[in-house]
Length: 385
Image 1 (cartoon, helix red, strand yellow):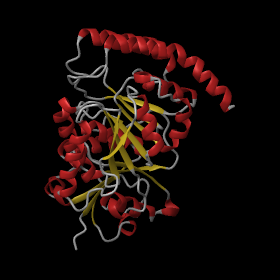
Image 2 (image 1 turned 90 degrees about the vertical axis):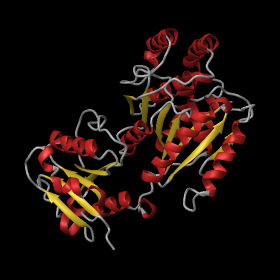
Image 3 (image 1 turned 30 degrees about the vertical axis):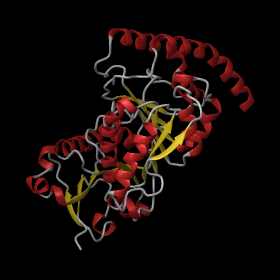
Image 4 (image 1 turned 135 degrees about the vertical axis):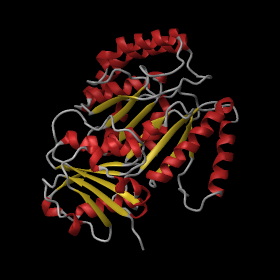
């Protein structure tokens, strides 16, 4: 049976014995010192559909990044395994500008454990049989979405395709913030259609629903998801198709490599169709909340966050279901107090009609929450000493 090809771009500085480390697969090894365009030969282009994983092994980060960028330019869904040293390089995460929505993993090579390389490749090619199962929970907040359900349907379709392709240990959860319309009924209908159409897709927790007894304006959604869902990674994302799955996949790749405890996608500088009033309010919030945020973070009110499970027990004691839409700020303040590693990256976002945010009332409530935040968190800090 043809198990596919593994293409390796390397300068051989690490002297990894690929032929013995990766048996059973058809290896294509490119060892030249040519440019990234020349490394990706016409032969490699021609066999694109047979290639299961690209391995990039260069001591020179820039050269490796150029190869990765070239790969993703002509094959956006390519799976890439980046070989690195166990001792990490200092500085910022260097892969944040890598395009495409394929899997990206970092493998820290150790000569005495060379056999781990095959396990890592198997983990990418056959996630259903993987030794390491990095479960991913996609948690979508829902509140009176009946009129906007077409956007939710479109987002679920795109998200499901991404999960099927790259994250077989991923599941989708809805947390309903006490909806009073037909949102739950529409979601159940959608789930029934999907489940009847497949024999393999997440039979246990796929499209599972959690319901809150009273509306918490987002705050309870985070707490409910963190408390009752078990996963390695928690992806909190708005369900109205305002974010692109390519951006979600890219941020998830960053989160899964364990450089950061929390990865967030900021929309403030990229959001489309936002009114001048909302732009001004957003600018004001960024300005006054800056002292509450971790270094490198400017936008607390983002609708896309990915959290590593190790950070959950450190965040939960700080969070209150009464914080409303200010729960994002509260979470970032908790991350700052706990010295968690937080990474922020701009993402594409479309502001959908029918937002449940009342600009005046919720802004006033936001300011009140800020006033209470320091008092409450100081009390939490004292009890944790």
